[in-house]
Length: 296
Ligand SMILES: *[C@@H]1O[C@H](CO)[C@@H](O)[C@H](O)[C@H]1NC(C)=O
Image (cartoon, rainbow, N blue to C red):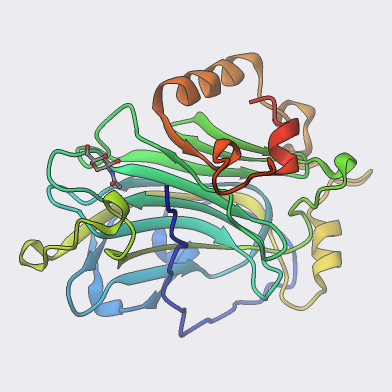
């Protein structure tokens, strides 16, 4: 199986808003948390609903106004209805620079009636190649569903309607780097990826079915907001619990899955997983170390 790398549009504009204090942010409103990063004319605002449009002129994307460390980021998304072949809608967190970290949800479209795939990936210190692919236990084009990324110093968890679909655990004790030292922005975009997205790139985008529309609502960022005026190390310190301050994401109960969540993850993997880089021996003749130690 050939997995193509994600191709995100470069973000032309980045306006950073500085905050004197590191704070917790939680809001449901798009405009408070995010701004368009490209193709503003492909945004449609309908009350609390935001729609991003892809046509043969352009896709569209947005990014958070601030960067964050640790916490939970969620949004409700309704994916492109009908023919979505060739399109990719993404929701991800990413830091900047050549050694960036990134946590990705990528929704790979399909022809009418065929299932969307959810690809997740994780970059640590600039290197990715950790794709997993799932189908879902519902049709993600019919209704809004909540997609979340939970991040703390112990684990990164991808959740769909609060069901964990992937866990990447901190294995620094095995000598593996873990993403916990770089502030990350929150991003989403829709773009044409018909060179790889659908059935390995065999099905192309049918532009006669454009525009392709992804809808969003209920944005939530419950995370530690980073200041742009201090170093990453200071942000990491400010966003970690200490004697003076306690953050919920450092609680032992969110440091690992509980028994119920572990069962949910097993169920997802048994019933919905269609690709896991950990078991792709053609691609990785030597099993990646993190996979050897993963018990999920
Ligand atoms: C699209 O549908 C085909 C046929 O059901 C399936 O094999 C494939 O995994 C689906 N998703 C993508 C992204 O190709």
